[in-house]
Length: 314
Image (cartoon, rainbow, N blue to C red):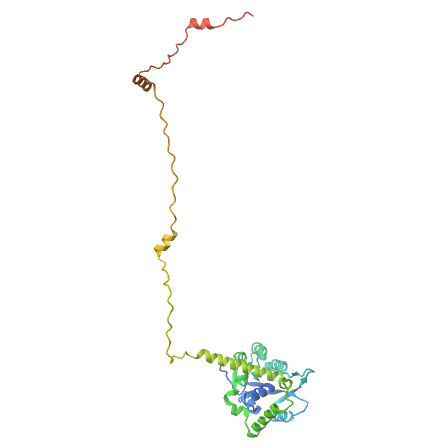
């Protein structure tokens, strides 16, 4: 995403000194040129405020570093390094940087955060939506969260020009090599002392590992298969050919077995009763004479009177 930068824009720069310092040490073994970082962040615009967030130790070796920052026009906010009984160390400016970003955003046109820590994503999203201020990030790309790069309006990768952003002196290089050699060969270099790192240093190392793993995954996915080697033909084992399923076989399988129809009951015909004529004809043929019934005659009047009983006298 390209943004417009002009000389009238008000810019605020917040530098996470511990994040940039440990990134430069883990990646290149060098120190950061904060003067060039500030110049790149401002980009010819009107600087309102530049703050560097640093950690102080009991030895007080950071005084010269603080003086160099102030001479470059950068304010410093210091916090003491906390060492717990178990040997763990705590030095974190994430909350302080997020709070200052939300305080300064309404008075700025552009906010530049010099850090690659992904914990600033919620604060950046709030500043963008609540105030309309554009947010830019400048840090080493190899130790920067990919989600942070997607959220901001512009990202400046310091890995692209290490000669500009790192202090490459022969004396410093020799000093760093001797320092690392002495740490490895010293008898006090126990596992507990080696693991006693600040949270920012651990976070940067973890971020570098995750970024390298992502690059490896992308490179393996984009690799094409090697076609130079001849392909070896593999003979297939002799297998019985699969039985083809045709429509006829499926029809035959689905056909039902013929069912026997129930036998019909034989209807017995009842012969009609013979009439008088047929009876007579049968009697004549057989030669036997069957007695026939003679019709009864109706009684006469005299017979009716004789049959009536005499009435009894009252």
